[in-house]
Amino acid sequence: MRGAVARHGDAVHEAVRSASRAATSAIAASWCRSALNHGLDPDGAPRRDRIDDAALAAVRAENDLMLAVAAPVLDEMFRAVGRTGCAVILSDRRGVILERRAGAGDDAAFSAAGLVEGALWGEEDQGTNGIGTCLFEGKPVVIHRDQHFASRNVNISCMDAPVHDPHGRLAAAIDVSSCRDDHGTAMAEMVAALVRDAARRIERDLFCRHFADRRIIFLSEQAVSGSALLAVDRDDLVVGASRAARLRLGLSDAALAAPQSLAQVLGEEAPPSFENADRAVLRQALAQAGGNASRAARLLGIGRATLYRRMARAGLTG
Image (tube, rainbow, N blue to C red):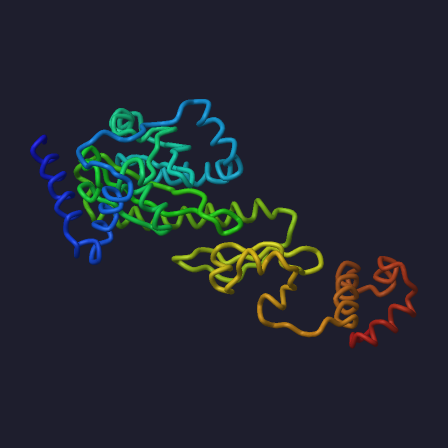
């Protein structure tokens, strides 16, 4: 085993020295970042192991809504993969592990590998790894065993996907890791698909929870970018957009800071019209009244004759 570890360190150093490897391999590019940008040694100890309990409690408090939304998703993921010896992990945007699900029989192996709550798995701390490299690149990754930068991590396989907050910013990484040597690349790819789906579910549910007092507009569901969602207020002005919606519609924070109607954002802009507004109010009142004009008039606080006049002006038949 010691010889294999030494050979891994040599392979990393060789890749870092090669001018062409980083241009053709995402793993080699990450190894170069780890060595040259972060100053790490593949055969060295981690720069920092973990934060203390007080700091972890503070980080968890910062992410309390995300943790509440993610908990059932993590539980479901663990039910799907836990019996195969995998751990399910959620980190914050800096690579601090916030939550971990692991079976009793595998707990010691994951603890020995440093995959515990409060541990630091950013790329700047551990070099190339599932959590840190996913967060650095902002996209799903699979880091299989000797693709890790650090020799101490070559017995781990990691499947990761990023999680974005309701404002489209990178917020976390969801990770499934295995310390078993019988988990090959085919198994890793199957688990990776589950991880990507879990990340999209957390993003969707987090967006809906954050904008719980708004109306949510569903635009589309993409396998890569996730759910394209808009949040609108009672006046149909857009007040929020998920990352997928921002990508689809070209929306930025600056664009969302200025009030825009849903029609504007969707490219269906028409001049504002009192008639259109009246029509919407009248139809809602009639629907609530079950089509009874007298009840609709009472709901609106107007007389039945006035209701009929406004209906005629709005192009609604009695």
